[in-house]
Image (cartoon, rainbow, N blue to C red; front, side):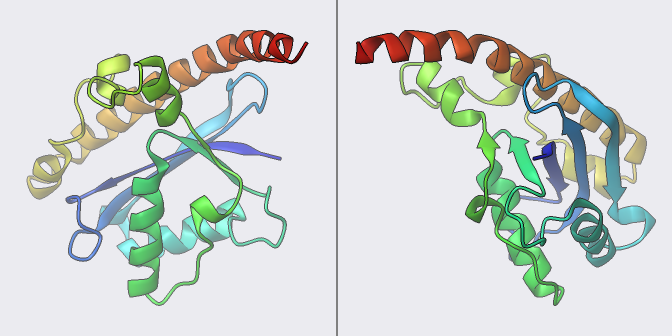
Length: 182
């Protein structure tokens, strides 16, 4: 059951008119969230949106029959789900729903830790991620691709550190929860 950090960057927030410009993923240890292998970044500006989605589908096994072939781990995976699903469809590609198979989304955990409040639980508020990604469309328009890559690498590192924190702390809560049964 390979777990993979998954994220995308886009030219905006509307999958009906904006496009995916990067898809990034990295295998994580399923018990610790330690990175296994390199961060893979598929860049639209080196080929096309269709090609990076095709490569993602082919190289991750996301369409395999076995539901645990590719288990995405992310923060607000509904964003990736909606964009990948719609953009793949628009490009004539078939892709399983990310949220229709096993996945791990850390955003709900952050919201629960914040007493059910969404405000203040974005990844840039919880980690060393520099901003929300709002500058990515501007970087893309200005062809500042090196800034996009720098942002992606910092974001991936920040997410993985947060995931490792949760993977370490959550088993202790599970122990407390099982004590409630007694």
